[in-house]
Amino acid sequence: MHYTEHHISMILDAVKLSAERHRNQRRKDADATPYINHPVSVAEMLWKVGGVRDTNVIVAGLLHDLIEDTKTESQEIRKLFGDQVLSLVLEVTDDKRLPKAERKRLQIVHATGLSTKAKQIKLADKICNVADITWTPPHNWTPQRKMEYLEWSAEVVAGLRGCNHILEDEFDRVLAIAREKIKD
Image (cartoon, rainbow, N blue to C red):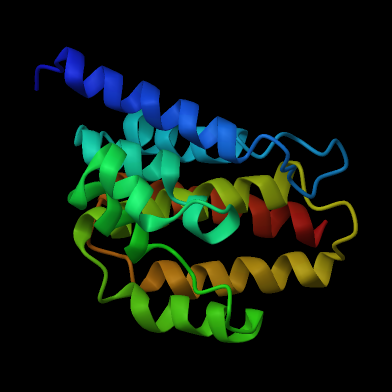
C-alpha cells in the first residue's frame, strides 16, 4: 500500500492528540512512565509485529484510551479522524461508569463480537499490557494480582482469536514469558 500525505498527517495528528490528552497521566510502574508510551506501543505493535497497514486501525490504536481515560468526546474524534476511526475507538472503549469487575467481565463477553479491526487493536493492547506487567509492573501489585491479570487477559484474547495469527502468536509468547517470570 502507498501511504499518502493524508495518511501520514492522520497518524501524526493522532500522536499529537493522544500526547496532549494523556500529558499528565502516568503508568503505575515504579518509574511512573508517561502514559503516552502505551498508545504509541499499541500502534507500534500493530504496525511492526502484526503487519497492520490500515491507517484507521493504527490511528485508532493511538487513540484507543482517549474516551475512556481523558475528557475527549466522541464527537471530537469523529470530527478530526472520521466515523471509521471513531467506531473502532468506541468498540474498544470500556464504560467507566460501570464497576471495574463488570468492565472486565464485559471485555471477555464482548471480545468475540468485535470487528476484526477492533480485535487487532484490543489484542495489541493486551500484548503491551502483559509485557508491562512482566517488565515494568505496577509498583504495588503482588505476584497473585499479576497472575490474575494475566489469566483475565488470556480469557479476553480467547475471544479475539482469528483476527491476526501473528499478533496471537506474539500474545502467546509474551504471556508464557510473563507466567514464567511471575512464578519465579
